[in-house]
Image (tube, rainbow, N blue to C red):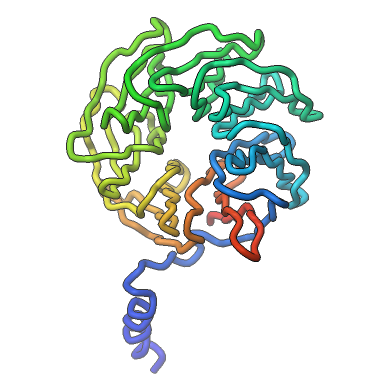
Length: 329
């Protein structure tokens, strides 16, 4: 008799959730939440020190960076006195944290062991996203009305400054190449930069899509994935030619996207109050979760080696800001 009720229960679930697609069993499991103390306002990007299992949280609206001990599940320390921190990047070879400040255009450097201030590099206005390369170790910072700074962390010095038109948002280094692909929503497209020549190689227009902010490298580095906000779409583009290979619907106000090669999935976190999970099945993708989250919680970090997705949730009346930790099965 129980099997007769299953179709009815499925229909009722869809009706009660307004048609929203719930997560399949074990797709996303909220494991725990870690409060961020008195942090208020908007939260921006995240990065991680894997050896110490520390999560760094750019608390833009609070002019601070929260340091979360993931092993103990608590806020370890708050770095204060910053100026609208937006991007954060941990450099393992030098054991240092780089923080890009949108308010004063500086990149401030902190020791990974004692979190002491080590120095700063002044770039210009609106220092934003940060990425770290491995060999050779470089810190890339997007800033201003169109520039990508290349920093040598061993010298703590700016060694190149690549110019283009429009403020850079999310960007990725194409593995095995000297190319960096940068989302430039002001120009409604993507600038392809050559690190070797320190120049723009080409530009890929998006035409019918606008507000392209987050970006991720595909499973095999053949594609890059990016999410747009107007309209809300998730698309893959060939990392060499810029040709579109996949176009999917997305949750609204996307700010981070990640690929999971282990499970052949893509995670998109959105300020509209959802995390979308897409899974590759043969030659197509199927949305396997449309997980409800607090509205405005659009910044996240997927850490493959820990099998966790970390979501930054800003403070609301009566509830402190927190990191929500999702376990991935």
